[in-house]
Image 1 (tube, rainbow, N blue to C red):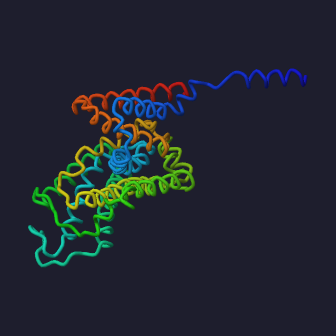
Image 2 (tube, rainbow, N blue to C red; image 1 turned 90 degrees about the horizontal axis):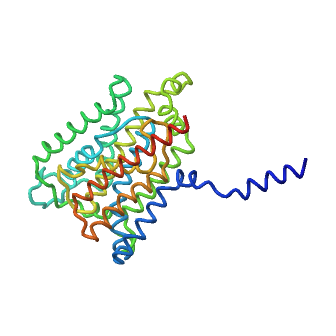
Image 3 (spheres, one colour; image 1 turned 60 degrees about the vertical axis):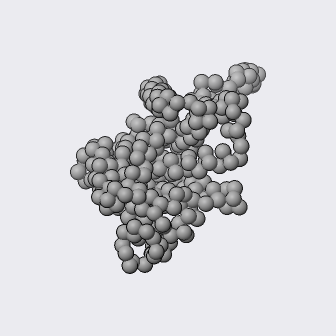
Length: 339
């Protein structure tokens, strides 16, 4: 009998790794590596330190939005408003953060608020808009698509009206720290992104709230029966997404030293694309932080690399759209096999 068991174990050990399972788990990492190798072979400039830092800096803002979107999509929702919420947070914060002698000052005679107040205002507006989204969805049961589409339109309109369609410049120099580099090499936005990655991972992996996010996405009725406060948690999920939109507003202002009501246009689509490519299921209940990070990097590498290779911008959009569709099809086929 012992010989039979040994033979069975030996057969299992020599069977080799399951390629299909490996690709299901790490396929997006393989795609990322192939893209990096292919682009760098065509243009060695791609792997230069300066280009990599620029790529990571741009990807960090999209990645922060995508991490908020991760919680939303895992809970079987969608947030179309993050780009508009970012714009509203940015213009309101910028209007009170202009230096005293700024030209075209929105509030003449008003002293510039401290950097701490600017941070609180941006994060507060983002969180408030997100909470309104969540509360509408939780208490009225209207589809997330409709609720966030309403906020998408209203917040963008409010940003345009508030700023009168004009850019706001001459901001507090302290804000520029958020867009600067440590030792002229490490971008502050990337450091902030890493912190948000860790926080989001801890929330989803080690907290009751994180477990509730997956439970709500898996089966909202079962979650409610099991005692999870569904309405409260849905409100918090969208609050977190809005909060990160406010954080991106601060980083955006830090990078440019100004802002305008059109900032963030289309960024919600990039966030959704990054989470989708990263393996987050729109059926709910499935999604990881590392997958979202890799999905964001794939989009960043594609945009940056194709620009270096002089690929037409319209073709880039077509390829990005195809990647999203393929990712969703792959996700549906994978979930169908599990069922």
